[in-house]
Amino acid sequence: MRKFRFGLLATALVVLVTGCGAPVAQSTQPKTPTPSVAGTSQSDFKLTSITGKPVVIHPNQKTLLYFMALGCSSCVTGEMNLAKNLPHIHADVISVDVQPQDTPSELETFMKQTGATWPHVIDKNESLIQKYQISYLDTVVILFHNKVIYKGIAPSATTIEKELSS
Image (cartoon, rainbow, N blue to C red; front, side, top):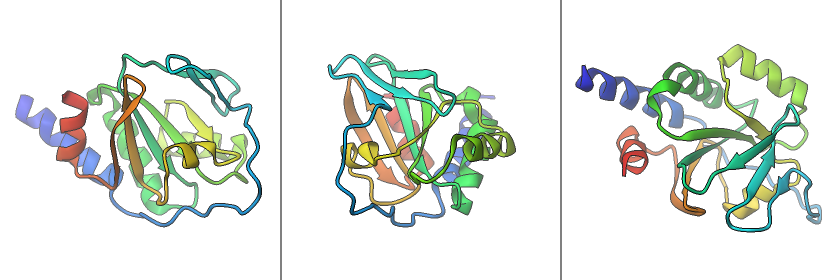
């Protein structure tokens, strides 16, 4: 049974992180502080979800950030597989829409279509893109103890499993 679960998780994570890998377009507009990224201390990192609820990244819990876009077909597949296999992923999950022009309503529709139940945020002023130096869609960032412990574009399921289990 354990081999089956690992195989299922590995398959899901491969599908989650493969695909688009398209460059993330960044605007040339001057950056201004965002109200959606609060928290100034290392132990108080908060975001605001598309529903307006606070999303806290807990320093003692691993958090997987999945950088995606509504128009990315592999991101749709990734979200669907993440939703299907969420019980096997032992980390908080937050999807970050990198297209500032997207609306909460559009993202809510996307979430319903993909079965996503975890928090989603829209990086309206590209602060998360800048903070984590994201250049491509399908980038996965894993945080633990307020540090990036892993960052990769379409990482293998083995890599993600290793980072989440260590």
